[in-house]
Image (tube, rainbow, N blue to C red; front, top):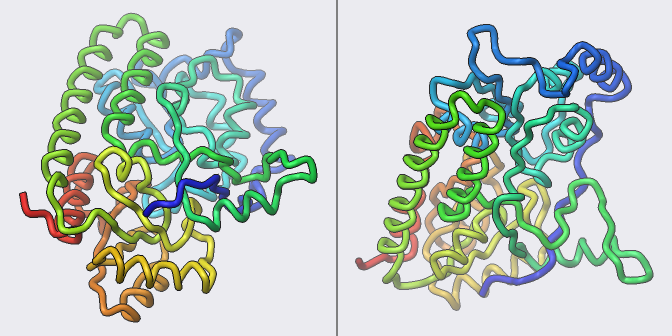
Length: 334
């Protein structure tokens, strides 16, 4: 069964944009619009949108269409959880008309956005509800950093009780899409009708995707799957599955020997056939566990970025590849 604990992600690496970045940030902000509204549009007249990483970029591009110019802070192939920003990237944020990001996933991005002075900010978690997911070890780390009074405090990359991986649930992702559509319309009222229409079309696509997952995972031999890190808690909750993760919410955290023993027991008791690994994180531990248990390995993509190794060109294609991978691993019969 999935652990319903208070997860904690390991502290982020030192923020690359130090004093020099802050100086550049202040200088650029002084030259921006007087209302703090960003750079006033791209050179071609489109709305200048900066997205924090791929799932936010996909929303901005689909909803914005021809009326936006979208750039992303997290380049393809870069693991987003511990992204550092250069001074140039930090200053770049102050020039945006709209920022689309997910708070709590990338501490360096959160800090830079808080100082950006941009008026129109679409923050994904504000449009939906968050849940608690992770492993026992996330909870143990969280306890280690609680004060003597029993209260938890922020420690860099610590998500507390909240899992940020909301985009892997098509229903929650659709809720975020609606919020992003509203934000774009507020920033660019002249094209509000286009943003509304594009939002409706994307929500319809995500509703279809949700229906495909519901039908495709309705009848399986087992409901439990093992992954590299605990990214799929929302997906598991939505479709009645149980995720067991080698690492916690942070893909770079190392599992303990006790956690690996637990996974051996889970695999045997729950008739697990496959250990899933990812395209952007190391697959070494997943392959070792699979070899020890005589299990197959396959990719379950957390969609934190699209590369030439991804099983599709965009969010919808990769999610459908994930569905087929889950159906095979879980022994779907419908």
